[in-house]
Length: 146
Image 1 (cartoon, rainbow, N blue to C red):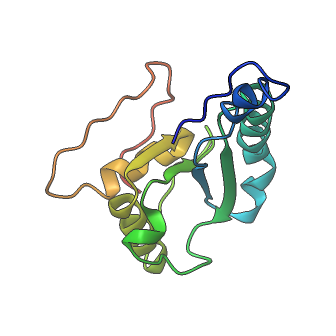
Image 2 (image 1 turned 135 degrees about the vertical axis):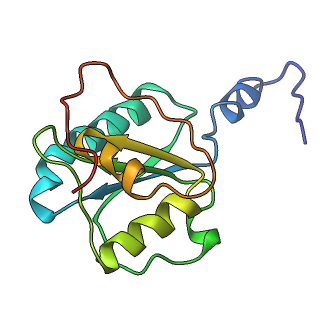
């Protein structure tokens, strides 16, 4: 519902209403291990700065270690962007429960971003459906399977 104010002392109130934040965008940063938390702070700081610079946007960033919590259902991941945060020194090679957890999250999340060694998850979790992927040309050459 739009409100119109015609030439009175409340004329500025209509402009303030336009600055209201949009629905928050949830970003889940998945870490391979607890030691990777420090390097993932870069992502958290980036979106905190973005929240301060752009008044209409709201980003909520959560960092968690792979398979420490239950995956949850489709509604838990609807609308979320999932970032699997890896480094440039080692490939992700989940096994057992971790592999199942990663597979479920990749299938439930509508947007998945693989950073660093996490790109190897794409080859390990390859399912029957085709996936679009882009890998930077200067990415170090890993063995595709662990």
